[in-house]
Image 1 (spheres, rainbow, N blue to C red):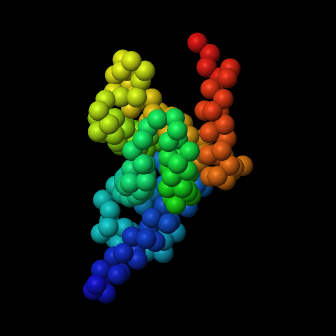
Image 2 (cartoon, rainbow, N blue to C red; image 1 turned 90 degrees about the vertical axis):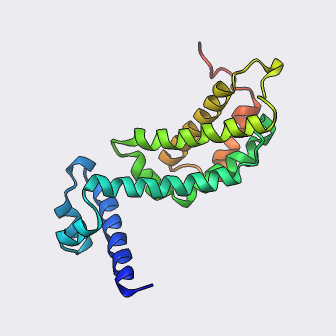
Length: 194
């Protein structure tokens, strides 16, 4: 790797770290290129050599973290989407979230959290549809559940789990997995109000 490549990587790393620090201190819309440059101890020209805007920087951080989460999670899911497979899948999912927990927590507190939610949910839905198709259909009794409904419900379950676990500080990933397993094993008593 050339020294100029190392300088680019180093300055991008400093810019990203500065940006993440700043959005924890003030709203995303209030973070300026000047703020980032001052915090990263670079000049504004260096910022513009790496990114065209604050939004472009945000999108790169978002893409890197979502890609990392999804690659790990989709690789670790064992393909079984039946209730008996949940303990393994929940632990794998939470373990992958924990790899990027700090950055994901910052991104979840961002006003554009919808983008993060949507990208993760789309990957999960696609993954579960593929797994159901590979197993010859769906997992519903009588085979009367549309695969898109099953994959959507499963992806929604994991999204709720991710948001809850990332926004609380009380439970480790193991404790969280155990809590969710207990809820599932007890059949969601009294939780579903129609």
